[in-house]
Length: 216
Image (cartoon, rainbow, N blue to C red; front, side, top):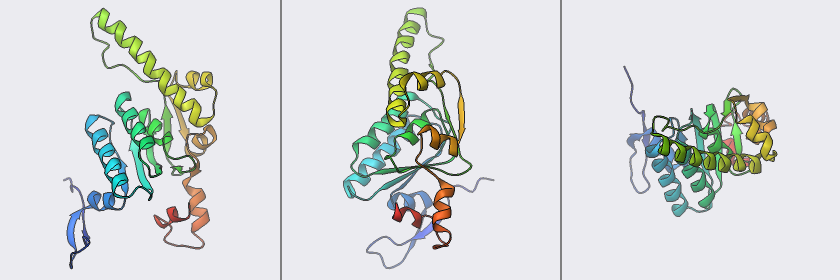
């Protein structure tokens, strides 16, 4: 039986007593967002809207985006990526579980030096796919042309942000490439592997998460 969204006590500023609210509402107030599903229009609008709101509320404090997603629509993923580059706060991206396809693109879009993968996370990149393969021939040809443009844009972003040559990224995207956290760091998709942060903080601060972010 599903437990639904957990509720936790939270005292709203100005109130004398705490009230029980959804866990994710509390996390949003703490500038922590979650991408834990396939990337579609609804979740894209949800995350982009929260980023814009948090940026308006406080344009300095960092925002944390946790990612555990199989990927999804290329245009929706690019919308989240562009929002991350537009808002004024730095965006931490943290991969736990998997960041595949467009989710790895969003992971890459975090502020340089603030892109993190947990030790057992998996990151996968491949080329975007079309959802209109059953269209009639003229529409199909137009879709192929558009898909080629989107693929080139995505490949160019990967190349710029990882420092890899365009042709290397393009060849890698021809197939599904799964990477461990360490391999993703070597490739340039992330800057930090989670166990590096554990090693730094466990001897000095037993409660290293999420306090660990304050030192970075």
